Amino acid sequence: MTPNPRIPGRRFLHSPGPTPLPDAVLQAMGVQPMDLADPRVDDCITACEEGLQRLMATTGDVFLYASNGHGVWEAVVENVADVGASVLVPGTGVFSEGWAVQTEALGRRVVRTPVHEGGPLDAAAVEQVLRDDRDHLIQAVFAVHIDTSTSVTSDLAAVRRAIDAAGHPALLVADVVASLGAAPFAMDALGVDVALGASQKGLMCPPGAGFVAVNQRAFARAEANPAPRFYWDWVHRRHNASYRKYCGTPPLNLLFGMRAALDLIFTEGLDAVHARHALLASAVHAAVEGWREGGAVDFYARDPATRSVSVTTVTLAEQVDALALRTLARERFQVAMAGGLGPLQDRAFRIGHLGDCNAAMILGALGGIEAALISMGVPVGAGGVQRAVRALARATA
Ligand SMILES: Cc1ncc(COP(=O)(O)O)c(C=O)c1O
Image 1 (spheres, rainbow, N blue to C red):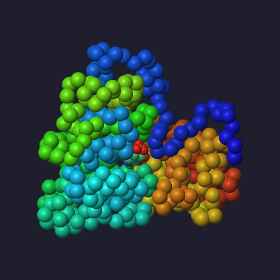
Image 2: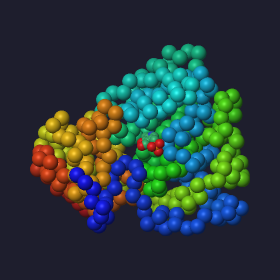
Image 3: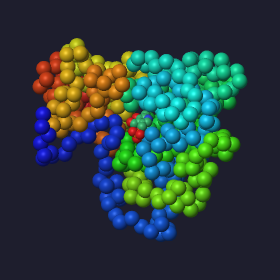
Image 4: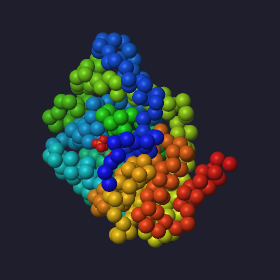
């Protein structure tokens, strides 16, 4: 299908990142950059750091990078693990495996626990691996909160309990790239030592800013870690001067946008933001419940309790051409979704429902997806969208 050069109306962006940008974020970014000595620059940086601390419920240091999520994965590896040391990466899906592969490429050893199809990470297996590591060679556990490929949420508290039960000193690092600003996450209360995120999902900003929050224990590990590094180094970046904090010029306009996005989140109220995500996810899940009655689509996440509030991975029967379906949804019905990843490549589509999103947008997106499924001759049961309408109507009654 040839893309039409004109997109009528507004296209619904429902990939799980990048997500749509609120007008306030676009406007905040659409200004001239400033000279780095302008006090407005420092004000903005402080607002972003404090806002991210508040969002992650931590008193730890925040380090912001001109980078994407892969960049902050690298920052974590370089700071918490020595070259040749070991890290445990519990299997969740494509994103745990991507982080594991990157960690190995940086000269660290990786111990993995198996990915359970359609399920969350296996905290019992984490505990067993750590119990077996009697010499404490494993320096950190890298856990993905919501794996965007499977759309399954894992229980970070269970990982904390597993580390404690094994009496192991490994640091707990959480990837909250796909959960922050959508699902509740309280870093300090959970006993997470390092959390990492990126700008383009629940934070409603363009891609290009990655960040970590680091508690004292993890910072001390970085200080003692002899691994060679510079750009990513937390010790080097803990400084008042913005040029030093960013190891060069800060990504100013992105930070202006991030400050505006954080303002939006706190104006709405963090609990309200989480409740909105839970509600919209329930509408998407209701629609998929309806579609799956036709026998050709299904949830990938098996346990409804683990289905994420930010993205839903929908599997397709073998005869359905997943790429054609997404192309049709995007080009004819103006709903842009993401495709399946890893073993789900060509077998699934993923609906993003995080960030700057409301009930009408979700219903529009689900309507476009249902229309695309029907146009392709995919049996969709009796009314997925109807169920989503009812789920929303019931909840707001
Ligand atoms: C959970 C998770 N971690 C890490 C990443 C990597 O982020 P980036 O694509 O910005 O490098 C992603 C990207 O989608 C993700 O979903």
